[in-house]
Amino acid sequence: MSQRDLAIRAEGLVKHFKDVKAVDGVDLEVPTGTVYGVLGPNGAGKTTTVRMLATLLRPDAGSATVFGRDLLTDAAAVRSQVSLTGQYASLDEDLTGVENLILLSRLYGYAKPAARERAGDLLDAFGLTHAAGKQVKAYSGGMRRRLDIAASIIVTPKLLFLDEPTTGLDPRSRGQVWDVIRTIVAEGTTVLLTTQYLEEADQLAGRIAVIDTGKVIAEGTPGQLKSSVGAGSIRVRLHHADQRAHARQVLADALGAEVELDDDPVSLTARLAPGEDTAAQGSQALGELARAGVLVDDFSLGQPSLDEVFLALTNRVQA
Amino acid sequence: MTVTPTDTKSDADAPAPVAKEHLQRLLATGERPAAPSALTSARVFAWRSMLKIKHVPEQLGDILVFPIVMLLMFTYLFGGAIAGGTGAYLQFLLPGIMVMSIVMTTIYTGMSVNIDINKGVSDRFRTLPIWRAAPMVGYLLADMFRYAAAGAIMFGTGMVMGYRPEGGAVGVLLGVALLLVFCFAFSWVWTWLGLITRSEKTVMSISMSIMFPLTFLSNIMVEPSTMPGWLQPVVKNTPISQLVDGVRGLFDGTVDSGAVLTTLIWSGGFIAVFGFLTIRAYNRK
Image 1 (cartoon, chains in turn purple, green):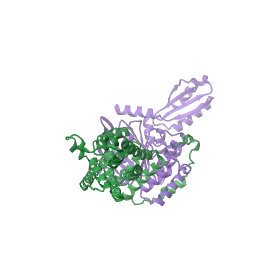
Image 2: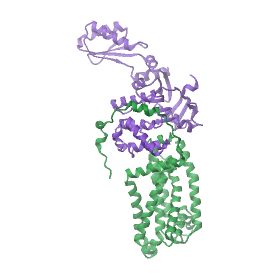
Image 3: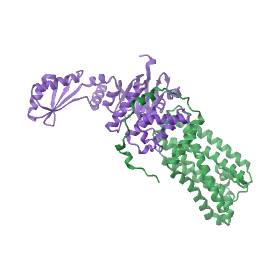
Image 4: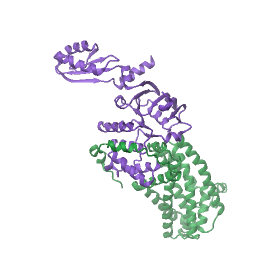
């Protein structure tokens, strides 16, 4: 990939806090115009990495460019292209929603009347007009996130950092934030998203870097990562417990997979081999069970959980 | 008193859905206004400070009531003992106690900066393409308003109690102006402290342990000539004593140009040294 097509190119970023190596040599290549996911557990170094790339923290070692501008020598140019929605609302809680947006619009260079107009438009687009005059401290988590993202696109950034944008949100708010992110990317902004949720990265990101203990331990498309770990599992909950042995045999024959009996006496789980097409296997399994006369109450295709991904990836690193 | 309705936190009044097409239009405008000038960005931050006063007016009460309490307390407590009468003592005390009360409230600036830094909102400010000192200068500009208000209230109270400035209106205005210049400069000590300490409580305890000796070991309450000989040169030459001499001279119509000049030099020094340290700490945070 040529330098020109990269929104971010980071090499060997390191950041220590006292004795802790928060980030320990991170390399990233983020292509423009996509959502790039940085996936990892708490304390993996995601936020520290983002803060360095957003010019908030000075790396102890390593270098990075954002759209070709050097993070250390050309920070002002980097700042004019990026915006950040931090993990904790980057808003003034004492001020109202509309005051926050006017304040930031003025700081982006809008004159007073234009700032007012921009603030009103953004509140409207984010469905927050009714809460415009309320102090941000009275906002719900989902409203706060929206206002925070609205503040990040007062001037459409070329690169938007979203640090765990849905942590702590209820499912509906989470879905809304996802919609917003998709819309922003569709309009040409590159998004670097950190998350603890594999599902979120899977839903949004074109590529994912998995970070653990300050290092990138895997990188690729969501499909590549999942298939490198195992395709996942098929879980079946039967109507009659006495059909379980039969169902186990049917699944084992149909899928050629290992089938385990769960603690729940009506449930069993087939573990699929890496590289298999989960969806196709799922349909096949369901068909075979129906043909064999096994009554099914519940059926689910499980992706490998984040835990499984991490265990698999970290074991590989150590091996 | 502020009342926060608790029902607003529930998702019952959850926002309307995101208007996707509207959002697309806003993103597509691609407007990129020229970055604001240093002055504009500082003024915008000053506006933010004023809004905070509007939403949390208690903080203003603190700054306005405290000076009156100081003035009343010290006049009637020490007047008889030190000057043989409260009227004569008030004449001596008012400029000094005004300096003391207002310089003491400069530590609030450091606490505000520290609270901002710990709250994530400063992450937003620091990724904006604006003059790096703007958030701090904005605070200080709004503080000038508070200090001027506190000064006016103290002066008004003093007049009611019988204070009469020999220097006239011009002298008083120049005296207050000198005080504001010094406060603006001195506040950079606290902005720096606010940036390098962990919590606002630390800012408070460190700044109080500096301010108490600095304001009491001065010519605010008593003439330094009443102090032991070894202490006098120290007390006479602290920046606070020099400021009090300057302000008192202007109020009394006996201008001490040496003290005024020394105060301006101290002010320049504070801005140069602690302004530099503040911006460096801000950039490294």
